[in-house]
Length: 316
View 1 (cartoon, rainbow, N blue to C red):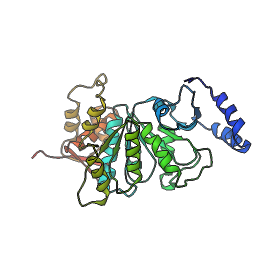
View 2 (cartoon, rainbow, N blue to C red):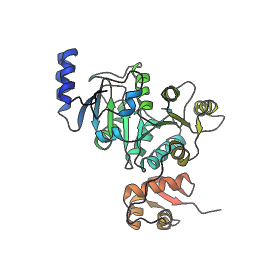
View 3 (cartoon, rainbow, N blue to C red):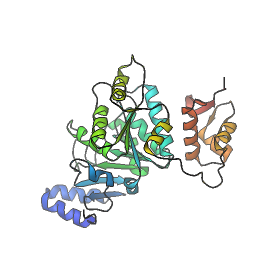
View 4 (cartoon, one colour):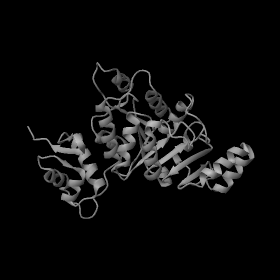
């Protein structure tokens, strides 16, 4: 397949087939910072999407275009998530993105938003696949999150400018969420749900599917339990995902010793401290401290406190 189409060739193709007013609007949109058209045939087109059913002929991207070439994991789940589900999604996303892996999700409320926040807090960052045109921030409650993704992550849409958030767009969007990713982690999902649709699409596309179990009495756990019964990998910690997908932790940067986890715990002590305080005490970069604290939370060694502080848990 020819993957060398230039942005100018893409625009000419749009001009031949699109409403002139839409072409003009697209040209004006492209004048904004870090906005791109990426077409089939463009070397920047995400390789994984070449193998999905009906890959989009054109993608509208805003933000860090290099993230489209990064290894990626999708994290999805309920819009009406529990506080525990939101916390788990953000912690898992932050810990995985600390390995340079991009977190992909759908910019919805609940689990999606938590996954994006976690990804943005670490080097791997996050990609949001939109169910609207690239000029529409939806849902409105996630406007500031979308802006942060446009600046430090990436917003991606296959829909032309002005496309509203109509229901039929979101199942279509879901195939790209799974298609961009090597695997899909479902944190909370009811029966039925869009998250299960994404997981089923992932299976059709040959991606790995992971599910986080919950209470047998909780409606928002029913979808995850159903996936596990169908063969999805049960996930209890980040290593379950990393090992299954063959992602190993990178070598520690220069100046960071093997004892780093103990360094952070020692700096924390048993009194409350913020990430900023821990970074100052250890001399480590804030993103790396955040990733380490996320791992310590997942291990049960640290608990979050109100006001953005953390506290060490005394061993039993």
